[in-house]
Length: 216
Image: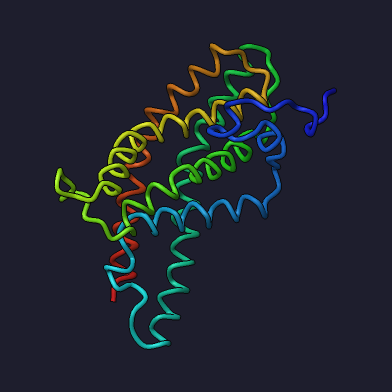
C-alpha cells in the first residue's frame, strides 16, 4: 500500500486539504473534544463582533467570568453543532455502505465530525476580515479606497463559494476514508447540503441565546 507521505501533490490540496491530512484524521476522543471547542469558538467569534459588543470589557473578575463562560458555551455549542450536523450524515453513509457492499468504518461519524471541524478553517480569514477589519462593508462604493474595493470584490466572490468548498472537504474525506463509489458519495453530499441548511438555523438560534448570556 502506498504510504501517506508518498502521495503526490494535487491542485486540490490547497482548497480541500492534502490527502495525507484526511488519512490521518483519527477516531480518538481527545481530538473530537478539541473539534467541539474549535467549532464552538468559531461559531461565537463570528456570530457578532465581540469587540463592538464589549463582551470582554469590565473588571478583571467580570472579564475572567465571561471568558470562562465563553469557553463553556463554545464547547456546548460546538458539540451540538458538530453532532447535530454530522451524526445523521454518518449514519446515512453507513447505510449507503451496507446497501452497496462497500467498506465504511464503523466510526465514520467521528472521522466526518473532525473533517467538518477542519473545514471551518476555510472561513476564518474571510469572516475575520468581514467582522473585525473595522471596515463598514455596507458603505463601500466608488469613492472608497482601491484596496477596500478590491478586498470587497474578493470577499463578495469568495463568500458564496465557501460553503461548497466545505462540502468538497467532506466529499474528499469520504472518498479517501471509504470505498463508497461516486454516485453514493454524491447522494451523501446532496443530503449534507440540505441538512446543513436546516441544522444551521438551529445553531444560529443557540448562538443568539449564548450571546444573551455573554453580554454584560
